[in-house]
Length: 612
Ligand code: HEC
Image (cartoon, rainbow, N blue to C red; front, side, top):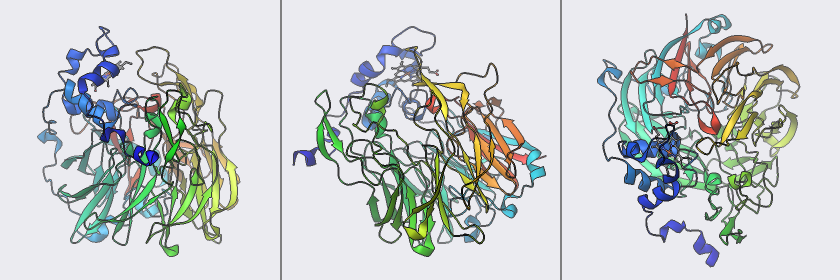
């Protein structure tokens, strides 16, 4: 019974946190100083509540705010900031004609769309020739067409959806933008409750279209694509640390929402009751948001002991789902890829590829590739909340790809943060057909060495970039980054033959140039994209590179780590590229640049390219 009570968030019983108290404990140590590197409290008091909250959620204060729950964030932002409305974009940022026309239902499924995480439900991130509209020669001639700045953000991490001449994209400030693909002018914006990084899925709804996406605070939305009007919103997960990062997918009037969390970093607070989050998929009816089913990846957590401070510890927990499910309508299932457990006991469903029944959400089979992986952020610091297993934190952070090579059997291809790539047999409960290591940890690497946000596959080969990076802990107490990136270590792109996993080629990483800004790293953790003849892989060094899928030679290279003149008049720079990858549609290439998390170079820009 005692354990059961503990399952409820403790904040239910505690008084609402005081913003002043939170400020004193968590902020004053730095913000009462007179140091030119730290804005003084009096400067923070000139900012809007929204801007301060944004700094805590996905801005400059993101790492500092890791131990703070939602209420504490809101309370401290309200205590410090001014309660003023967020300024609307200037009229000059909008199109002369603001109408959004996705006239036919098929616009969202049209052949040239990049709608959601991958152009098709197989999650291969492959755009076929006609839809891509780019030959190898055209790729070599790509030029910047327009840049769009995310006002007030230091991170750009939402993959755009491109369909019917439209771009729909979220941002760290929680704003959804509808804009024209050819010019980047705005048609409408919508303010969500929290940062939005999941890619947006457009689906027909009646005579119009719905845009489906989740935010970083557990809310899921349906907007009318034509107007930006809210159709419905639903909190799909009550856990305070929930975050909806993976893109939704839809089938037969139902949308499937993957649920992950940042509870791992909450554990940095030794008084935090670690851990209670459970990864899940939530199925909602697209029409009205009604829940059809919810399927958890681990059972109910129970008290397992206490940490050295006497704070209860709970488990099992974790197995968050960070990436879009892969639909296999033919077999009536979807495949999801799970992350690590956060506390003991570890479960058989962490670091696994799991098949769920589309109708019920029941687990049909589960293939774990790494047992016993329980980890949270305290393992890297005071270890007070660290489970006995202590990692190694090798999540699946990306979707499995369902491929059917010509003449070969169907395979599920999955890349793990461990550096392993697996081919599983969807016909035989995910039996492993082959496994290959594409990266090994270097001396300074922490956690991720292999596939982080996603691979790509064409008919013959798969392309896996390595997120391996070197990182050192910051020693300067005012350095708000938890890690400093090593400019010489990490990265690399491997092509494997799908049939047997043999290596076709390897394109080594390119180390950061002399004098590159701090935060530069050759790591390639962003998702990879393929079109016929070309593979796009972006790097934490800010470069976006196109490789020949034949031999890995670099065909085109564009450095995004600089200032850009933007179509909406916002001061914008590019930085590290991480998270989502490149989107290709109808002869245009889109990418977000700026990913300050993990010590990378900050940025706030969406870039669109077209051949000269
Ligand atoms: C370890 C020191 C440290 C702590 C603790 C800290 N800050 Fe900061 N804060 C900084 C530094 C340094 C900057 C300047 C960052 C920059 O300009 O890149 C900053 C900048 C900010 C900004 C401006 C961001 C922007 O968008 O311009 C806000 C708002 C802020 N802090 C709020 C907070 C709040 C609220 C807390 C407590 C929850 C907090 N900080 C705790 C060091 C700290």
